[in-house]
Image (tube, rainbow over all chains, first blue to last red; front, side):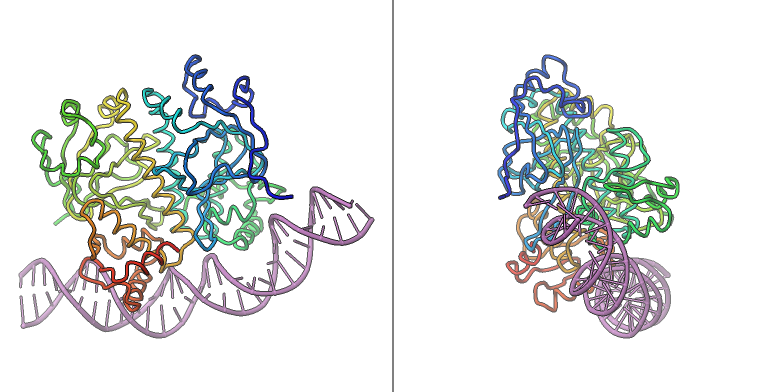
Length: 239
Length: 239
DNA sequence: AAGGCAGCTTGACACAGATCAAGGCCGCGC
DNA sequence: GCGCGGCCTTGATCTGTGTCAAGCTGCCTT
């Protein structure tokens, strides 16, 4: 079967409240009733199956997205195919703002994903005279930037073991915000994705997981990892 | 002489128009006469000598800065002293927004630097009901984020030679925006700064410069580099 | 002019992580 | 239940970049 780049299904946006358990975390989280209804009217709720593209680098950036459900990988490619994952997007995250008229990176779903999609024009018109909304966008952008800077430190100056540990801790903390604190960290992305996020090869990631398990810091479980010694683990991730 | 961490001089902000040749590029670039005067009243113009700290990671973030003149390095440190430079700030750049109450990185001057300093409270009160200003801040943040993502690709997936070439091209283009296009790219930062920006050691940076010179792509000149073959050079930086 | 020192370059060697290659595990379709 | 393919792990070897150690250059001080 040929790979379909089209979203699996859409719904027209009214009566989709069930999708929005993450609304308090999302871009629209502070809108009140009436404004939110107006905002909803601009949205298309779109559902993607596994491994579909939401948008691609260099395409005209005609829409922005609020991730409602599922996980997306955001990445850039070099001409020869080397890939750098610049982030994993979780529910509540806001995607697609670009400093130029084209997207500066690509995004695709990992498992199934649901988004609120807004066309750029109507979206900009909605926010342009709503300072609350603009402040919120600023907050989102500032947080993203700070995460990106942490990642630069990781990519430029940490060893493989530190990279993997820091990744697991960071991921665990982001999940905790959504799902609460847990002992086992679920890893919906594959080893290759983790490697491309950390600037390593898949073999090094695999070996490092094994090493951390041998050192009794984690246990590898299907689709995830259980952290055994959070104290020692956080220390490794920090230093 | 002990190293002084205090700014070398300040002026009180009225009649400092001469400092602001970069105003069209800066955060305040779209304010009109009256609003700009009100904005100026919030600013302290501060001058720093070489290698002074504007602010440091984990300090309470009580001010934001618009860089007027000179160059600053922005960086993060690991507990053991490893350093990652996350960017070089040029005139017009806006510094110090943090997602938490504390700065998430440190900034210090390279040569002499002049800034407009705004205390957080008054600054936030000024922008909070000015959508134009908020939109501009969004633009700044989005551009910064995009640069950060480019840098992640560089740090995670490029070879030493590609890193140095991409750095020189990126730096040349940023300078061009301020000073116009030139054949020789001035490098006010030292080799160690370049190394810490690119996730390399100073020796590797030095060897790579030498290699690029041997290959007749550049000529090393005092405090800079002359690009001999822009075509071939841009290709190396891109791929 | 001499001395000192900070910043840069160069060389020899070491090693973390890449590359190449093989094999294991597991879920899925038939 | 069997074979296939995707994903992951493991081993052997290679290599780009780091580390360590000199030495060079130009500038500031006296």
